[in-house]
Amino acid sequence: MADESKPQPQAPKHAIQTRGLNLWYGDFQALFDVDFDVRAGRVTGLIGPSGCGKSTLLRSINRIVERLGYVRTTGTIDVLGHDIFGANVELLQVRKQIGMVFQRPNPLPLSIRDNVLFGLRTHRDGDRKSRPSKEVEAQIVEESLRTVLLWDKVKDRLGEPAIRLSLEEQQKLCIARLLPVKPRVLLMDEPCSALDPDGTAAVEELIWSLKGDYTILIVTHNMAQARRATEECAFMLHGKLVEHTETAKMFVSPKNQSTADYIEGRYG
Amino acid sequence: MFEPTELNAHNWRIEQGMRVLFLGMTLLLVLPVVIILAVLVYKGGPALSWAFLTENPTGGMTTGGIFPALMGTIALVLVALIASIPVGVAAAIYLSEYAPDNWLTRLINLAIINLAGVPSIVHALFGLGAFVLFFGFGTSILAASLTLAIMTLPVVIVSTRESLQAVPQPFREACWNMGATRWQTIARVVLPNAISGILTGIILEVSRTAGETAPIMFTGAAFFLPFLPESVFDQTMALSLHLFVVATQVPNVPESLPYGVALVLIGMVLIMNSASIALRMVLRNRKKW
Image 1 (cartoon, rainbow over the protein chains, first blue to last red):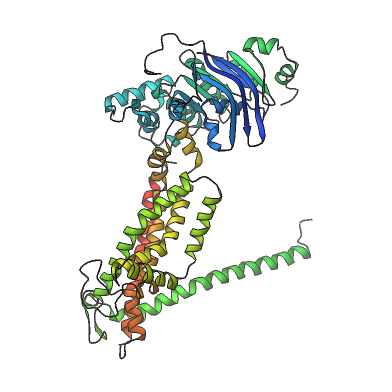
Image 2: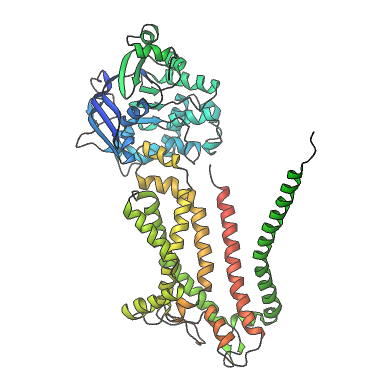
């Protein structure tokens, strides 16, 4: 990934590929031999009952799970064709290329503008001296906020603390602040579960508008949301990936009995 | 059907009794502060004057002012702060933001808590041994201030660490997830939001340092030295020791003099504390969450 600003000559078909992924929290095994392919540019949902390992899988993909210290992983995870556990991998670059959105919106205690620019100022295009001019920064803020459909609401109060926004707007801002460093993959951990129905609809609409440009992986508890807002769906149970197929197929004719039982609400 | 029972009446009496008990204890706590201040103002007030603050003591310390002691205390506190703030704040940042949760960290925390409990006279003897004799600073402002710094370090560390940990964890996680390093996170998000608490802790420490007597007695404070120190290697007078001296060591001191000295010392501390409260209010308004 020498120059991430230009599209790569042949974008790999799969943005994320895991092979034989096992993960332990201390003695507890949370993931069992997960082989998971996420196609580039699509919205993929990750569903399953609480404790099935879907958040763990999500958090392995930008290696944030390692921060806990007592985590052990075997197997491989390739993102855009590159092994993220490789010897030459800089963790901070992994986190830059793979943005993450949390269940509770977590804007930083800064102004709206500084939230959007935080990542950019952190990475500075990988060059110690490069410092974008005010005009460039203003342009990036506008683009990012337009992309998340927030610009018209906040353009006159970019200097206000981000915390004064509504939860829905905060969540959109949390997505917007990932964009200036041009990530390829966006991981979302139940991005709508703290929002009201209108906010949920708005954020789902936003996610839908981002597909194609970004590979999006969403963990969700909400079957209806998985059905509405994803193109592919993967079902996990007890740390194993049970079934992964087109969303339309999964909800109409699931292959696996446990998938069928879960999406019909018999457990979970 | 809603009439009180005998049990209700009994519980009500206990309730009232407890309220009076707790209120009484609180008043008991406030009472000494009020009495001390009242007595000091009443007895020491007449001694106060501009000349009292700006002139040297004369007549075997029975007349004149307290200028060298006042300046000496300010010098001692300043040098102590210069030594303790960088070390204390840096150590607190390490313990709060970098240190893994293991036995070594817990041991360090335990050591800090115990260091805070060491009596000041022990610090004084340590300062005498280490700074005055071993490092050869002699009895000097430097030796006395370093002793004070060591004594106040644990409190600076603990108050700073608490301010840092009051910054909500999700802010850090958000930064790390965007690929910020720990230091970028600390510099841009954690410290700006913890600074009011850190400064408050430091200022409260100043007020305590100003009043300490034992640690400076052997290490740098002079009995009588009616001129200002020229460098940190000189001895100096200090308000706290001066108060001890005029109250117990010098004959024929007018009654108002020691009260006047005490009033100045307490006045310094109160001004410091008010400043810390004001600062905290100003900085809190700038918080963004």
